[in-house]
Length: 236
Image: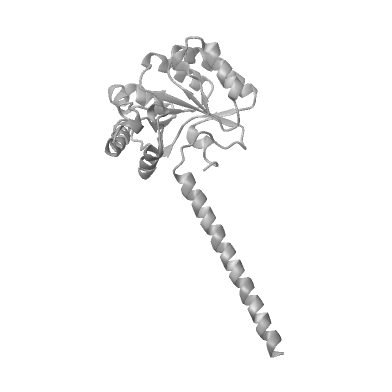
């Protein structure tokens, strides 16, 4: 009888050890996954929801912004404008107008430099200087960073995240800066559209022409157009 009791205790102890090890391994794997995700740029949002986001990078194109803003207001759409710091300092009233229309404001670096080609110190400076410029004008602290030219590596992402930023890329590029034919923009978007898409655009003449049709097509297909922070909300 004593032998049986010892064996039973041994089995119970072994089972408890196995359970403990399983839990530990599970927690370690979760930690590894989270650490990996922590230093990854975001290319798209939640694919389970029929939402898309417009991400508009602004360092030029002032003449086209009023028309874009009117189109967004007409359709009650809020998007994310990634603002260059130098542009912000030179165009305070226009930045204020974007903000007063309740659009989301992101950080696009100060001098529109290729982040992988500058030092870590300069990387930080580009982000912090832009953050301060925007905050001084509209009183908002940015927390989304779109690297100029989409130029990044692990160093760029790590620095941005250490400053409290999520690094935002895109899943659909309109390449609007390189064409005067607005139909090409529509073709690119219609061909690649998907749930959770982040659609990159700029203030250009072709974008202004494409927007009414693009918005109408997306709405017809039951897509909701939201700021970047909303489309990625349940993705990360």
